[in-house]
Length: 238
Image (cartoon, rainbow, N blue to C red; front, side):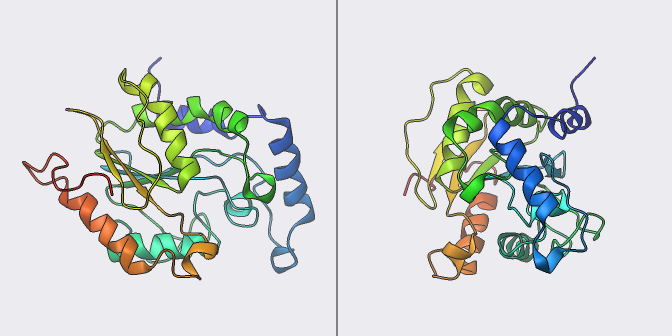
């Protein structure tokens, strides 16, 4: 039977490969935050969400404890989601500027969002081994997004996850370039380009390390790279 995004999602949501993450995600879901004490928490791994024909694939770090781990949808229900989805809406990739809950009407056009690790980690810090356990899910997901032209990593952890996925996905060497905001690494003819951005966490957005203008400009550069004849020219590593 041919693989599908639906089949992949069904496997992701029942995964229990990482005992530390399983214990933490379930404890958070049981204890709940006072602000959300009446909510029914998802408390499971979070699959990707978006347009299966997307040219832009955004890869985050992991679910937030009271964001995606609560709502069950990637980049939904927390301040990082508010920044990211607002920017995607401004750039024409989302039909609305907010992402608050499953069933809120959000749709992505030409964009698909996912994460390097599918379970919320303690202190927002997955281990390299936990990233490795999730890597097959990410690689399969990217194979099932045939129109992808740009892979946008949010933060160094997601950037390294993409670098780890590249050899198996495309049969080429692992890219040597380290993380830097705005960096673009072409992977060769017929393959997507890797792009990097600071993660839209409050730690970055509240301090001005990442601004809406910076992120919008990056999305504009990504879209420009899809123009015929561009091929990534003019968007080298920065």
